[in-house]
Image (cartoon, rainbow, N blue to C red; front, side):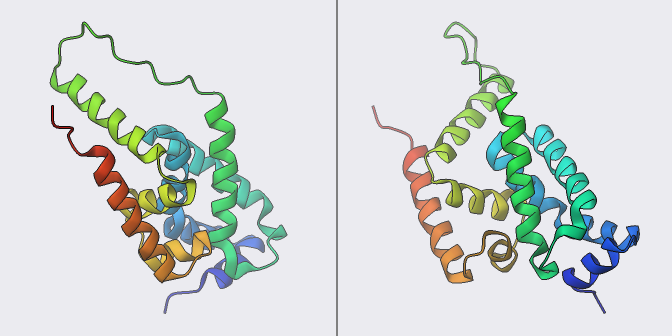
Length: 172
């Protein structure tokens, strides 16, 4: 029988590192997805998620509602990612005289997707990344973002439609 987040939090706050490890395994993908939303860099998102877990481990005893661990961790992750984003250089545009290679084409596509995601509101962007990048279910996303499953579904559907509009090739 799988233990609830609240049970794991209570045990971990008493020093049970195995229970904290279970929380880490359960919520790591979610934290990386949230961080990726702010940072647009997979490696940096992993760094931010790991740092958020370190902060969570140190401050776990301050969590007043142990069943709200995913939401609490999400807040820590957003703050950590935002702090890291400030110290990162902005994207460097591609030179017009560069020959398109597969690496450059992939970089251009990555940049186009990043720019399209930036056109979404922050909550919708986070939902898209948590669902498609981190593979979280509507229920898991609802726990983190504090919205209902139908609201998650609606936001995701509108976000997909908006991304399709933005990424559609323009006829010349």
